[in-house]
Image (cartoon, rainbow, N blue to C red; front, side, top):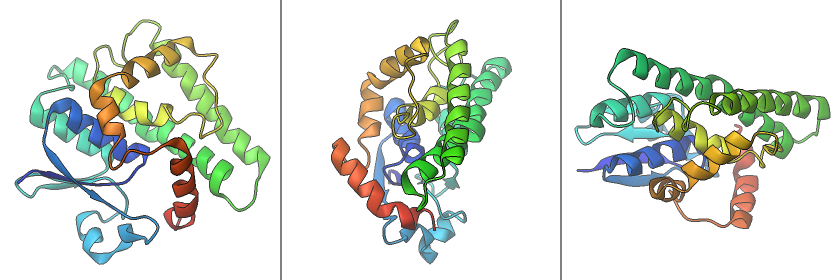
Length: 221
């Protein structure tokens, strides 16, 4: 029995498929259909009380939700991409939390108000875009002295890359952040990242936008 990943084509889902690819763990994919609100189905709520993706069920039946928790679990399970020494481990988790509490929520709100909200409210959109830009500046400064976010390539990079790579969808440019651009290209060139980004299906940009727009109202429910 392989690991089972319940996921969809979103940054939080890509974090886990990228990690599984990087760690060389075999896994099966079960796509959760946002358009039909499958994430709210009783059977899925039993796996993930929050009714979101991703959810991971390990070979022994151990079930875990929340992408950050899953990344830490996989790092501990394999001994890869999460240092064992307390200082190195804490640095990685620090930047993982930076993504979970900052980059993800702020980019998520920028996306909602720019792309999905029925009424365009420029001050609200600009507020979230400014905060995303501020957070990008922090990453750029960190990368001035590190090849990767926490030193060596880690689950922190896997958590950040899917979100930062969608900066255009949030309406935020990164031209003023050359080190962030370098990191984005370097991580994106990794074969495992490319493979994980194509889960659950390969899509061209036009299809991605069309599907996202169709599913958006149900995703916000």
